Image (cartoon, rainbow, N blue to C red):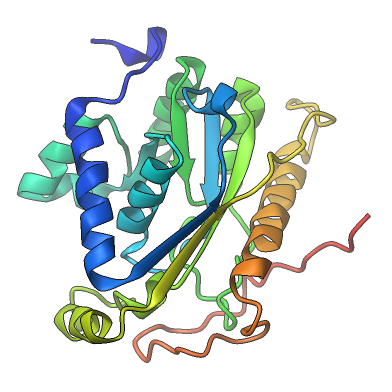
Length: 258
């Protein structure tokens, strides 16, 4: 079935996986979901733009999206699609493969653009990688999410998450068992917040620099949505994953309000 030319319906396997994700997250953490996706946007077209903290993020976001009544198609690294069992499930669930660092990245954006045009909800990480900002704030973003939204005239909702970095380490599967065992004992709080739609209506998709300006607005919105989730960790996180490298080259400078 060509889902690019008809409204996309989440397959049963994906709905079931979201229920399973909620069970998995509940076993190792306490999930708190705030904010909402307006009912009129839940079936798409819609771009959900999330910050990226940990390899555990897809499980957390699958569970959080289930809580607000959304079943998005994830733009996910090609490594997941190459895994024998997971890869088959990802393809059957309708997710979109992204082979980072290869010429196929352009094909992934084309696939995602067709999906948005067909009415899908797409979840993307605008940072393009697990963030390495010293304070775990959103990094300067790649323009893919913005180009998707501008080309498809789709609304963008920022999604901020906090706490998944305490469950699964950056270098997983190395250290995975230790991290999960620690979480089973401590049950850290994992918070996800859906923010207000990002206003991109004044941008002309064909104008030079429009994608960059839209990307900065999206990252700003994710940052603003994240602030209430870490009120007692405004600069640096309390929990530091010793396996995570630090890279200041892509620090995002929040624009002044107004």
